Image (spheres, rainbow, N blue to C red):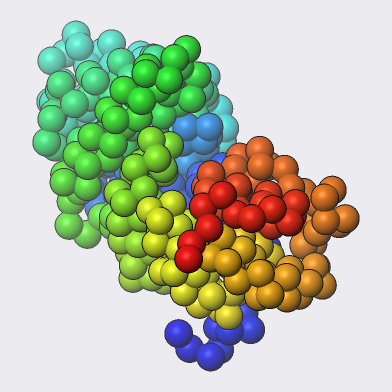
Length: 353
């Protein structure tokens, strides 16, 4: 890595927040959409996880352009898509959904070309996912894939359906139900990657999101592999922040596989490249679990001198809150446990000789 990156300041958290994930998805989707003029495919979605799919320039254009009221009846599927996208980009989810539902009804009556109908249904699913209407989104994506299973909208429909499945999994009544939904989401991310068109947005976001689903299932080898592949894809796309988030998550997953030495090396590299308290804190836990108490203590003291490090009193530090680490900072269970052991000065439960 270039020495110019060593002093580069990155956000103190390498957690994948909903907002940053949504921004990645907007860029990914818009790039895919621009690759097809007949049936654009926005290969993105959000599960908790809200607005998505537009490239940065497109988002800026929508933010500065006046919003036209929806036409009473679009003259064609293309008009309906244009109206719905404009409303969607401005946050008018209900209006966008109404435009698309009318257009789908007309398409059913007129026996519209499969690819055009699939594009309408795909966007309808996206709008519903952003409204957290996951069951209704699933119906739209299912219909899109039934209409045109391998067409221009298919990759995006699989991605969106995976997002909807993860939204349903998060609210599932039982662990078994959640597991089944995450496994289905993983299948859809795989189909999204398989069906992606040349010249589209690239594999980075679907790979990262599939890794997230593997993480939920604690399939650490699979998660590590996809995070690492996503990091390479983000690097190819010159998305450095996302690349580093993926690299950090790959290191966390590597730790969970039991290869603490490899995780330590990865986190040491990241700590030299980034101004990130989270990376250093994870490395503290890694050192402690590896039995290197002196390095763990030295790095903790250095970490506590950083801005916004959240150290505080050792036992009252936010890093002592495992729930905060897992849900807000996106750590993995073993690392969170290692940090708890370090702060309590306990021998690490998973100590490595």
